[in-house]
Length: 218
Image (cartoon, rainbow, N blue to C red):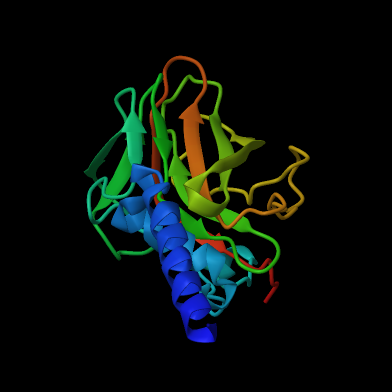
């Protein structure tokens, strides 16, 4: 009797697992999305060491490069629309690549999913808008839960238009210059960074999207 009950339980468990797998949205089957989700689910896998990329600007946090954050694999993993494209030309501070992301007016770009770490999340990148007459580059964070389900979208910052290549400010929920970490939504397992130029005359370029997943200060 016990063996029979155990056999029936095993079969039921297998059916339940298969049904759950079939319920996963198709988007989560993409390699980049699945990698980000697994990284978020298993927080210990977040790269908490990183490097002090922005040390010369008095930011001693340890950052890791987001998946294809340097655009050296083209647009792989990114969702681009409205004329956003990967172009030749690298930010001038680190000769680690030869491409960047161009964002004309009306465009939008959403990064691959990335690990959010155990607590806070800081995002920083290099940007330029030389000659741009737009109203800045708006940054949002899209939070995902289990099965790649969107939990919510947070508006955080708008970078000032018209400047040459420079590190962007850290995302700041107050809209000022003091760095405030993004607090992940309850139940979130991963996040995507979304970039949208505001107004006409955008000449934005973005390169090297970095993540500080734990908010640790160096």
